[in-house]
Length: 171
Image (cartoon, rainbow, N blue to C red; front, side):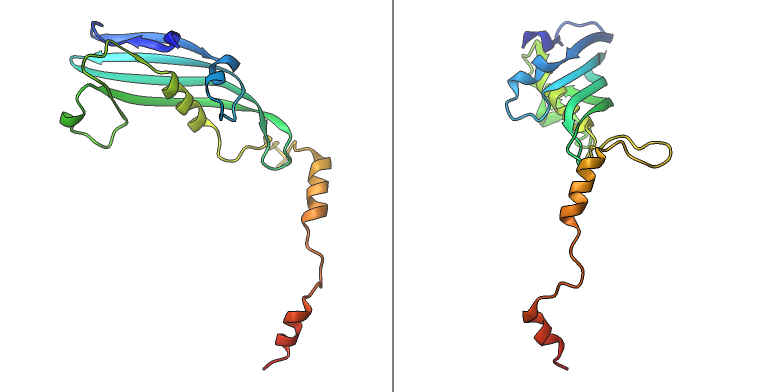
C-alpha cells in the first residue's frame, strides 16, 4: 500500500509528478469491486503554491471483463478522466466548500491515494456499459443473446385478463 504514498511535507513549491499503474492486483484489496481486470496508468501531479496543495489525477487505460448491459457479454471499457482535488490541513478554516477537498491532519507527512484512485476509476466508468456503436448505428452486441432476450421479453398480443374484461363492459 505504500506504493501509493505521496510526500506532502517538505516539498518545494512547483509541480511534482508521480505515475502509478493500476492493474488486477490493485483491485484485490477491494472485495466488493466489480472491477477485477484493468490496465490503467494514473498520472498524478502534486502542485504546491505557497501553502496550497492540489492533486491532479489523469487516468488513461482500460477496464476489462465488464458485462455489457444489453447482451451480458464481456467487454472492455476505455477509462479516460481528469480529476482535481485540493489538500487542506485544517478542515475548520477552509473557506471554499464547493471544491473537491481532502482534509488531512496537519501532522501528516504523506498521503496514500490508493482509495482516491479506486474512486476515480469507478467514477470514470460509463453509466451505461455496452458494446461500441458502429458508424452505421449498429451494435456489436451478441446477436444470439439479443434474439433470446427479444423472444422472452416481448409480451404476447391480445392476452387479456378475464378479471378485467368484466370491468370493460361497465359504462
